[in-house]
Image 1 (cartoon, rainbow, N blue to C red):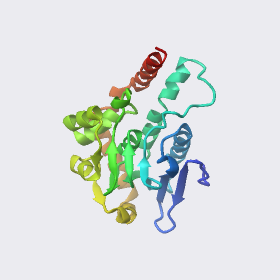
Image 2 (image 1 turned 90 degrees about the vertical axis):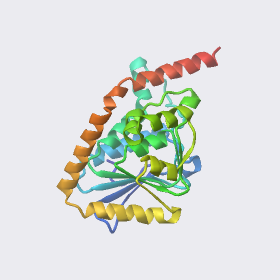
Image 3 (image 1 turned 135 degrees about the horizontal axis):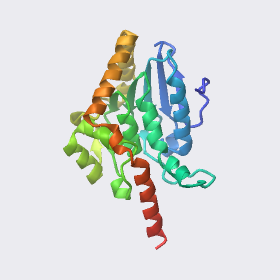
Image 4 (image 1 turned 180 degrees about the vertical axis):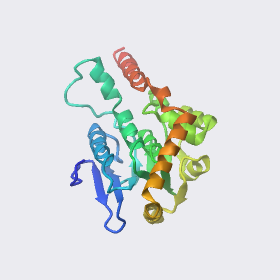
Length: 256
């Protein structure tokens, strides 16, 4: 892990008062924290270090400015073309790898939706163990409307949290929903007035840090295993291939 926290698209802060708390802030406020290749690379690097860092027990994931994240930056490309189809497959699974790494962090994770969360931003939140939202936050999953499949293992996670009918609704109709609706449907645990959200996140983190570390860790692992038994993430084994197919179909339509 980049121990200095010297990232271009992330702000990483170890709390000076709550020992064991680390906050990751998606830090592209001018672009509503849209998820670029660089941001995914940096978040994966950070998660790789956290996976073996026993000094961090609670991780908060939030955004800077007025957004949590506007989702994937679809215009972003790596400078060099893929070398072959396996490279294309790996690139198509970039967001999925980020979600897998967030999902398997040993620390308890808190997603704090400080503002709007769209598409991949919603998926990142579903990778967190607990979720809080600002009252002004709103959510949307527009992939189908953009002629894209919903990948990054999003459907199993949404199905567990929202149930089948509501998952179909948010994934197929692509309509915006409020933080109050997100709480009523089970996507977030609590909604707080905007100004009170940071304090509520710290209160929850302090409560978690007061628990016995081993008991809390084993409970997180058990909950993760049970959730995966409900709707296994393995059902999305073809996510990368689905995204590749969507990109090729878009290219065919574009080229006539």
